[in-house]
Image 1 (spheres, rainbow, N blue to C red):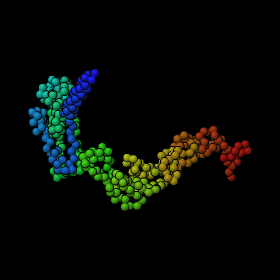
Image 2 (tube, one colour):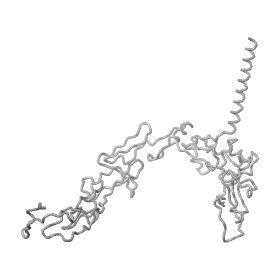
Image 3 (cartoon, rainbow, N blue to C red):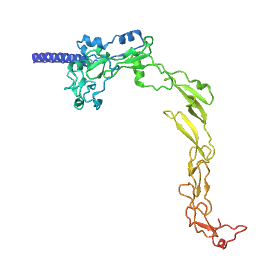
Image 4 (cartoon, rainbow, N blue to C red):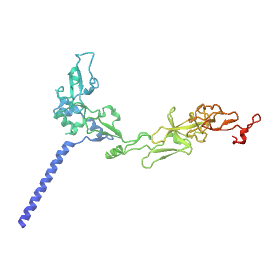
Amino acid sequence: MQHRHKLGRGAHTTSSVCVVVVLLLACLVHECRTKSCPNVALSTTAGVRRIEQLHCHEYLSAQGVGELFQPSMNAEPWPRCSELQLDAGNLFALHKCYCSPGFTDAVYGSNGLGLLEGLRNIDIGRISCQAPCPAAHQSIARLADTGACACWNRRGCVFEERTLLRLIPQEQRVQQSVVVLQDNLQYDFAVVSCRQRVCSQSLLAHDIILCAQLHIEFTYCDECPAECLQQHRSCDIDATTRFCTVSCDSGYLRVYDSDTATYGCEAVQTCPPHHYNNVTTVHTGGMLFVQSCVACPLGQDNTNAYHRGCLPCASGKINAAVGTACTFCPENSISPSDGIAPCPSCPSVPVDKIVRQGATDCSDVVCRPITATFASNCLSAETML
C-alpha cells in the first residue's frame, strides 16, 4: 500500500508538471498572437524617438512581404469598389478601385492586394470583394510583431505608413501627450492630450487614466476666466478637478453674447406688458442662456411681473394683434373659442336686450341697462347687466 501511494504521488506530480508546461506553452502562443500596439508617452525625447523609429515599409521589407506596402493614394485617389460607377460616355473605359480593408476579389483581384485595375464597365456589377486577404496580410494584421503597429491598412490587402508624428513639427513633438497606436490596423494613430487646454473643455475619464498609466500628471484648468472680475457673479475652483465654475448672483442669468463672443451675467429681463421673456439654453447642462422679449401671440396675453409665458385670453375676450391686450368683444357679439378676432356678431337681438358680456352663445342675453335715453320694461323681469 505504501508503494502504491508513492507511485500515486509521483504520477500526480508528473501530471501537474505537464499541465504547467502546457499552460506556459499556451500562454506563449497566446502572447504571440495577441501582442498589442503600445501607447507611448511623448513627454520625453525617448518616447518621441520610439515613435519616430516606426516605419511600415522597413518592417514589411524585413518580413519579406515588401509587396504589401503601397504608399498613400492621396495624389491619385482610387474609389472604393462599392462606390464605382459606370462611365456611360465611354463604353471602353477602364476602371480601378480598392476593396474594403482585409478583403480582395477572387476573380478580379488576382494580385492578392485588393487593388483592382483594368476593369471594364461590364465588370463593375460583378465585383464582390468578399475574399479574405492572403495569409501574409493576415499575419501582419494580427500583430504577430509590434513592428506592424507602424502600418495602416485602409485599402484592401495593402499597408501604408500611419501618419504618426509626421504631421507634428519637430520642435513640438515633446509634449504632455500620449500617442495611442490602435490595435486595429484599419485605423490611424491618435494623440491624447494630458492637459485641459481651456476650462470649457469636456474631459474623458479614459484619457485621465491613460495619462496616469504612463506617469504623466494630468494638468487641469486652474484659472478662472477674466469675467470673474466683473460684478454679479462668483467663481470657485474645484479642489479635485481644478475646474472653474462661474455662478451668477440671484436675479441674474449666465448668458453668451454671440456678437462679442463673451460670457456674462445678465439681469433677468422684465418685459413690457403683453410680452414674455423667452429664455433659451445654448450650453449643455443649461448653464448658459439667451434672453429675449417676445410678443404674445394672437389669442394670448401676459400681464405678470416675470413674463415667462403667455396665457390664453379669458372667456369673452380677444386680441386683434400680437403683443396687445385682451379685450371684450363688441356689443352683441360672442367670443371665439380661440380668443382671436374677429368676434362673430349676433343677429336679431331685441332692442331692449343685449348679449351678455363674455358670452359664447348668442342666446345668452340680458336686459339692456337703463340710460338717460333708454328705458325698458324687461328690467322688472330680468337682472340688469
